Image 1: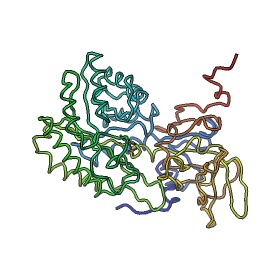
Image 2: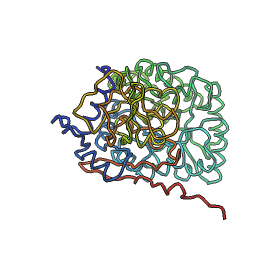
Image 3: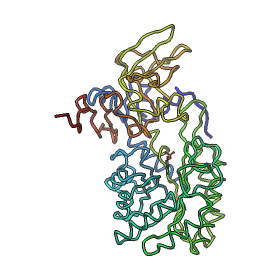
Image 4: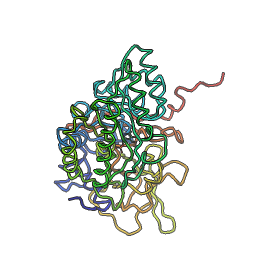
Length: 452
Ligand SMILES: Cc1ncc(COP(=O)(O)O)c(C=O)c1O
């Protein structure tokens, strides 16, 4: 049964998963995957993102086990498109991939995902992007508008090929209990449910070049309410049956989206994966025998839930000062490297992530006021939090921002203020691997043409 933990307890629980042996010994130093955090910082420089290979693999296996063998999972690369992270997931052979751009398609292929396990979703796919998907022969392009069906058909015809199509449906019902909605509302995502018949007609009309695979409904992220999600899945089954009726044939794929939540902030509890898995299995059993779903694949696409907990952003305290009774620690990285942890990717993320002073693991924070931790960008928005319960920081200490494996590096404004980009490091099987070196100040000139 999930319990509500304080932010410090969450950080400590996550730290113990990065460094189980250290936690078991009650070690005062932090050694993710058995490698000292100070050594990693020394070797690769701060700030850096650190990913745990073991935690990624463990999470992928747990999700597959909880959802059961009849259900498939695709990894949404937008959460973390780092090549090695994607390779670890692809090598498990337990998931496909969901991409939202040609760049993500390139990574997915390089990571080892087979074309027939890749779907491509997202608004404003250009003809070039559609062409690449057609050339790769991916399982389905999840189209977001009636017009996109026509463009995809024209692109496939031009290439002399056939391509699978998923209709991304924007259903009439909202998914309640989530924190950011992309469906059940008026917006750029998906085809209005009211246009479903027309969408099916158009796909079938282009049967020389398009194959209707099924439907895709992704309406929300950060979902915690299991019952609301199950009700949402029931609605999706109904839309699937309606689509099969319109098509006059069984569907090959029903993609339920997902959006399982990660409890970044205080008072948030873990998404109850096992309860959802059991509820979904019951729901599936009640629809499974319907001939309109004969042979159908049932898919969830998950981003943050697979990788968020396996990532840690590490930044060094540069300065500490007191002002009117408040302690400020300023760090060498901030919103430029980790936009979401500073609450700048929308109102949803306005509170503090779980943070720890990794250099003082043995110390318990004292004082009610907490510490303000601010990054190096010249804006008050560059703040990890105002009242963070942190063991008293000194210049040189390493601060760890947990739950940083998703929407971190790739979701940040890395060019803002022209600070060097952070390194990315993986701990895997007891060793630290540099996945991407830190940038250098000179990099800001790279690719720019000076005036003659
Ligand atoms: C179509 C689609 N699929 C999957 C995801 C991944 O969501 P999450 O990281 O919450 O699992 C998103 C997120 O925006 C999305 O738009």
